[in-house]
Image 1 (tube, one colour):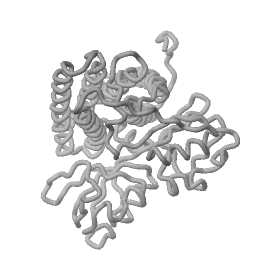
Image 2 (cartoon, rainbow, N blue to C red; image 1 turned 90 degrees about the horizontal axis):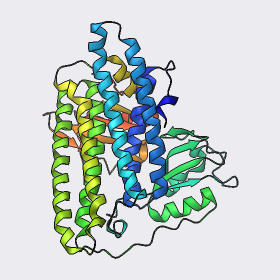
Image 3 (spheres, rainbow, N blue to C red; image 1 turned 60 degrees about the vertical axis):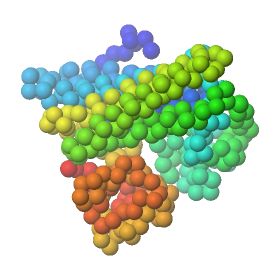
Amino acid sequence: MDPREVEYEPVGVKEVLAEMKDTAELLIDLSYSSVLLESPEVAEEVLELEEQVDLLQMRARMSLLLAARNPADAERLAPVLGVVGAAEKIADAAGDIAKIAIEEIGLPDALRAALPDAVETLVRGTVAPESPFAGRPLADSNMETETGVRVIAVRRAGEWLLDPDRDTVLRADDVVLLRGSEDHVTDVYELVTGERYEPPAPAEPAVDDLERAVRTIVLMKDVSELAVDLAYGAVLFDSEAVAEEVAELEVEVDHHKSMLEAWALRAAGRVDDPTTLRGLMRLASATEVISDAANEISEGVLWGIDAHPVVAAAVEESDEVIVRLTAAADAPLAGTALGDRRVRTETGSRVIAVRRPDDEWVLSPGPETVVEAGDVLLAKGTRASADRLAGLVGSSRSFDS
């Protein structure tokens, strides 16, 4: 992107912040997938989205500078600039990760073969005119219900539709990003594009404990994504407790980065070409940048600096909202494990944290996590999915503190 082509135009800061948030979060997922699944095609989409975030942050900065008319305005808007800068750092780090899949930086050939079974496949495809999904809302196609494959983003005529919902209509020539199990993705990809999807053939690992490194990478990805989600939640709900959890997660990422670097240094003596491990080192460094950026988003809460209302409004109006729900004693979910009620499948919302009545936090709760009366759930999803989750929890959704 040529910076000389960026000119000021009137934009709503709230809308720009919301789009930056949604795009940066998607970039984390796509960038890791491009590396772990050895997909240069997905990596190319990451670089395009990174340019979009660069443009958005420039326009946001211009609007914020024009809005500051006196020292008091500057003081209130300074944290907003911090949020803008943090989202840009996340996007840049995601771009650095994606370049590993495109450039000759060096990665073990067997990375994909060492992936845990829980990691889903992500592919990019173009909707064919004759596809049975073309011209139909996603709800009518029952794609996710019948196959478990989700459309996580759509690019149409150069414009991105992030987090498409059940009412989204796919059109011929749309570029779609599909996520799901490899077997089901293979079938859906052929129906969507009219072409057969051929995953890369797994290679034999050159290092005998490569699985350990891959597990560390997947854990770093999950922790950094959670840190970003909780950071926005901390700002939205002005919660020092959540902001402190973000700081703890940033320390955890640093720890895993050190572990991955130590593994790579030890493994260098056991491979024919140590440069094949360079990509892992870059991956570790970029992940640290993401967790640091998450900490920057929420650290103002710890300093006692009130977030500008536009930041909370942007989080509320983004494609994926963060809600806080308190479980009622008579709620369908009370006393039940998240997996038993298939909360993610039934509602479309993802519970990212649970606060017990004694203020103990459960981060990234799993299917075995039991929700008790009085628990406070922080969840992420669309507004419609938040309403469905609220029905299970027996609580109206809350965006305020």
